[in-house]
Length: 246
Ligand code: NDP
Image (cartoon, rainbow, N blue to C red):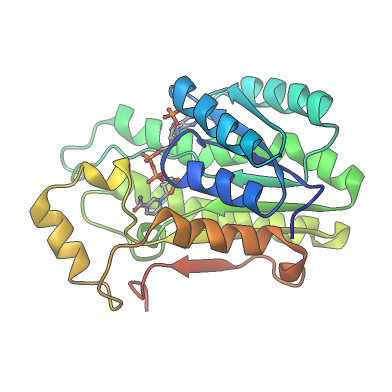
């Protein structure tokens, strides 16, 4: 399904990003595994992809750093020849009720989740336009659709990702480049492990399908959007949330 394609996945050393990298490789893509702090885990992902017979490389870069994103993309284009699929998965939370939320925690979440998505997209615009082909898949969240008490910074960043996605989809549609967002619900990763048992129970009770999602649930949707099978889908937000946002 993705043979001959090269994918860049941000934050791919662990969690959902790791699974996206592995699934894209299972479908035949070569994968650039971006990480920020998790070097060893990213290198493990690279080894797993290489054992599938695909090419992979781990590359450190904070997506919040515009210049570093440009350098990463330039280097990876030189190494892989082309990049066909960009998955903006890197994300952080710094939860607190607004009354207690610091300006620094608001800024940090916007810088990584929203500006980070802009940063990589911006640097991939020209290569994609030149290729007259490309796939961009951005990770939003059910929180970006519904809001959530204690996550105003995160909700704003993920709602912002939707606006960015739809605008870029309109700008790029004429060149055969699709831009979509995936909005996960409650997925079992380090990010959600940090929640208290009571908070986890409260979320689970709001999921019509009565279970937490898995990184595989998200990765399969991303792989579909990255494939030729999804060539007539752009500017959409696909919820993968067990029905949370119904
Ligand atoms: P994790 O906390 O498990 O992993 C976060 C990932 O983001 C890590 O790979 C981390 O890399 C990377 N990352 C963080 N900051 C940066 C940065 N500045 N530059 C590059 N990479 C960075 O999160 P999940 O896997 O759960 O989440 C993945 C995405 O899915 C996020 O965008 C999240 O908002 C979204 N999402 C998750 C949900 C869930 O329930 N888990 C629900 C809805 C959306 P490193 O370790 O190398 O620093």
